[in-house]
Length: 297
Image (cartoon, rainbow, N blue to C red; front, side, top):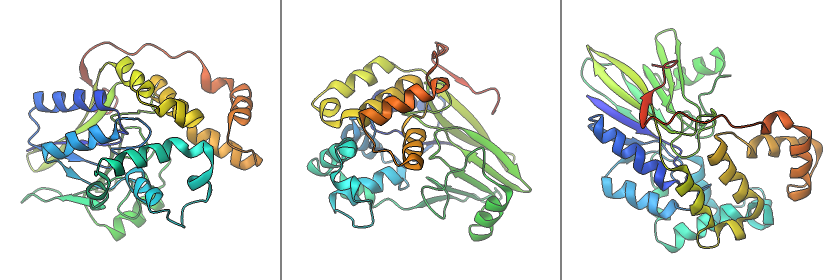
């Protein structure tokens, strides 16, 4: 059995198409999309429709759910999400999905998908962890947290996404895997990244795939319609994260919050000037169409 698990597409249609083509060439028999199909990039509607036509299994991602909560004006969201101009790019994406009639079905996805095969270790897939879609499996995940998650959700293999960086870690008899991101990787390799799981001799073998695609086409999509002009600084940050395969929004948001700065052009410029190490030259990515990450395979 070979299963393709992909996540964090974030409205990046060219990246999704490249991964779907590669997964087909690799002989994947089952397709699971592990949340965050939308937001960040402008082609969320096309991404949702493409995944739906394939009949892929879905889990709910935090960005998927954010779209619903924005349209419902959920009072549990920070008030700024509803009114602050900085967050207009999120609202733009939510309106596009709602207007296209794609929001309700997307947000009906379950929090987890299980893989059960006789004689094989059990697999539990969730966008973050099974406890919360924002609790990602990242490099700083402590043994205590792994223990707590496994005690609440005792699967042999825990597969997550959310952090936009691939991860393979073993804790006792438990294997923790992060799929990496299709549409906006944060590991400075801009190729679309996803996971293959193979059942061999009663065990699951993970293979991390990274697939080259036309990033310029994905970046050009930000200029279509009025996304970049309406979305302002946030839309530009999302675009630059795709271009550079680096995380900009979260470090900037945390920095601004710690200093009591208002999110906007002035504080962004201060952040850039104060953190030159985050904005150095971007190394060219290898041009092969697809390969396996040697450090993870």
